[in-house]
Image 1 (cartoon, one colour):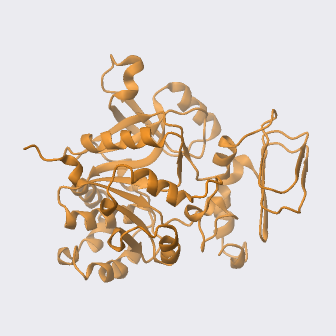
Image 2 (cartoon, rainbow, N blue to C red):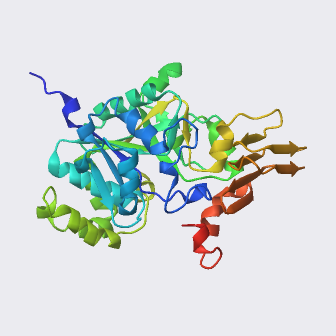
Image 3 (spheres, rainbow, N blue to C red):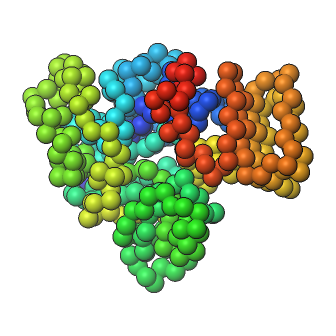
Length: 372
């Protein structure tokens, strides 16, 4: 009998970020993954969890988050088995989180193939997207291979990373979207001019941040490219899969470098395959992403929330407020976001949204009560 490959397929949802780019709605104590931005009745975490639950059994669908969010995780995902929740003691970006999850799963199943999925994505066609991830699991069963999903760009977005890739079968033509692509390079967030060049080239695609590989491949790549993380985290082979694992991770993980998996591994890995998705994907990482998907008037203005809002002689603006009794009026504004939430009013040029993180974390620039 041929073994069923799905018995070794796992999904790990990354849900430990502070969501600083969505400030002031997203705060350290209640980050964006726990917020229902879209008015669906489900948070971004809940949407992501139920999207992947359509293929991955509950016992092989894990969530990595921060220990500070334990109660919110329990409240929002009461059905999540305790053994499927991995808690980090500190915030250390995606490379340490993936290193932790991969080694945990490898101790449980050395044949495991893992899909690493961020939790802050909106997918208009979730079934199609998950089917593509499942196809990626089959391709990633090859030792040493990493599979990622690229998104065909629809506009020159400056807040996404890009993947340069070409179809392995040059004869595929219009059917190339169903074929594996060979990845050439990863490019970090470009400026507006470069984003347009990348989009026009036809060889660059948005980086979804979704990675698929065997657990051993993740471990080997991290050992090779990020030994300053793995030499400490993987120092004791005997604790993984035992009752000592949680205490061990709590002790050593705070010493990990604060680095993303993209920087640490993907930009250097040699065997990377991309699958192309047209499933209506949006990374809800910034207010500009909300503006791009929101309903707009003829001048490109989007207004969200129950309160009264006036945009007169404005172009390409985003106004968000939950205050039902406060009037927000804009006159002659262009390329501006206005976010009114509780005790904070944020006014920012759309092209400067990437500076929010620096603004709120610079020492002394903002009282911590407005961030926490």
